[in-house]
Amino acid sequence: MAVDVNRIKSEIENGNTALGIEFGSTRIKAVLVGADNAPIAAGAHDWENRLENGIWTYSLEDIWTGLQDAYAKMAADVKDKYDLTLTTIGAIGFSAMMHGYMAFDKDGEILVPFRTWRNNITGEASEKLTKLFNYHIPQRWSIAHLYQAILKGEEHVSQIDFLTTLEGFIHWKLTGRKVLGIGEGSGMFPIDIEKKNYNERMIAQFDELVADKNLPWKLADILPEVLLAGEDAGTLTEEGAKLLDISGNLKAGIPLCPPEGDAGTGMVATNSVAKCTGNVSAGTSVFAMIVLEKDLSKAYEELDMVTTPTGNLVAMVHSNNCTSDLNAWVNIFKEYSEAMGVEVDMNKLFGTLYNKALEGDADCGGLLSYCYFSGEHITGFEEGRPLFVRSSNCKFNLANFMRTHLYTALGALKVGADILFKEEGVKLDKILGHGGLFKTKGVGQRIMAAAMNVPVSVMETAGEGGAWGIALLASYMRNKEEGETLDDYLNNKVFAGQEGVTMEPVAEDVAGFEAFIERYKKGLAIERAAVDALD
Image 1: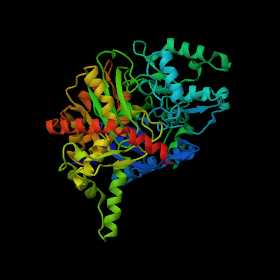
Image 2 (image 1 turned 120 degrees about the horizontal axis):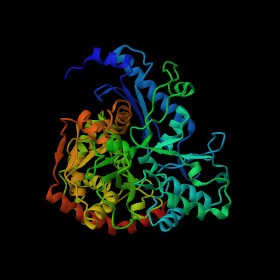
Image 3 (image 1 turned 60 degrees about the vertical axis):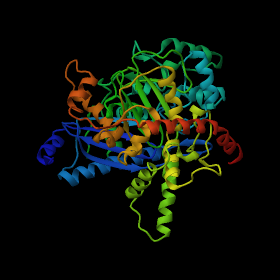
Image 4 (image 1 turned 45 degrees about the horizontal axis):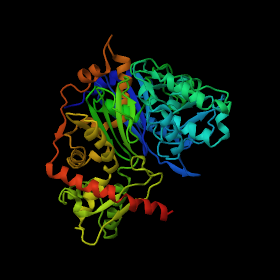
């Protein structure tokens, strides 16, 4: 379909647009959408977390330079495509990898380096809070980080004036508002689904728990206000406009939607915010989000209970590790090819190796690997060691080798998902997939269908990811009609007519994955030995 450049230029000039910027683990992406919610310009900045003093972190300088670069590249894309200087936008939204810990003093200064979701350092706090609340508190949740800091007697705790997450921090600095979308807020502290706010009983329990510490704050005073999708979350200040656009072209006064986590934006980007829908995001980490009709029968350590951006209850299976080890192996093949004098096209290399995996045995021929770059809470690991292992009688060939690495990328996810489907009897018609694992057509989709034993759909728009999802939330806030729900807005104004491609589980694959996962669970002792023996 031909692009109507004149229409798009008019939309840009009149601010009939929405911008979403998402901070992923390895990439910061900015996506500008037009009036029809289709992307019209984009920019990206690559970055990496670093391990400092045993903490996975990004510096404030990394955050701001990355944001400014992604925005500048998006604005340059607008200039290149439409010969326009971007000065205004209809609405803006920010998103980031979920939860973690950013604590600030009364002067707005950060007290300790940003502690990301990737840190598995809050085991004691997670366990004690889960017991206290009778509600699973994952290690990456902000409240677990806070309580762990209290347990360790960290000096900064008494100085905390505000606690937030990465996108909450960005939003605050650009608008002056200390707010967070309810989906991300549900990963700071448990939400009361009926009241659409933090759980007051648990807030009181926490305050009582730490009363003997004589801290100068109460928990409710340092948490951001939670907002629902579509609610007003402030406007871009003069200072914020200069922080975002260092060229100085962007004008202040632009409305912002509530900042959301990548889990919430993934739900939006795959039209999976209604009950009985689900989506799975597979990239550096992998997580499945299943919107429930009712609460589960009990709390499970392997499952996180969060919400959609509209406040519906969601069961989340989150695995810290997915494609990092897989990508590392693909890079080994790239090095080999280059050493042989062959110039490598990475898309072709990924496609070739992924498709080769489909030629392998359904159970991977007895091979086994673990993609644990970092710890994995679902299987009980505080640290990880990427590991490949086989016995002498395995079928060791390239197809099985690649299939093993695709299977294991979803290994921990399957352990958690099996609780939902096999123990709780949760039913889904299909699940929507998005993220890097699905870029090679038909491969990641087929492997995911085998792991979940549910049809997996991938839409053409799935590659747009969370940055597009938060752009849609910004667009919804600006353009929704009176009484129009987010579900209706997505169904009627974004995804109408988009069916996507659905792949049914192949029975042989499902049986093969079941055999693999039994081997995977038995072999966890090998991974434990590797963690204990290798620095």
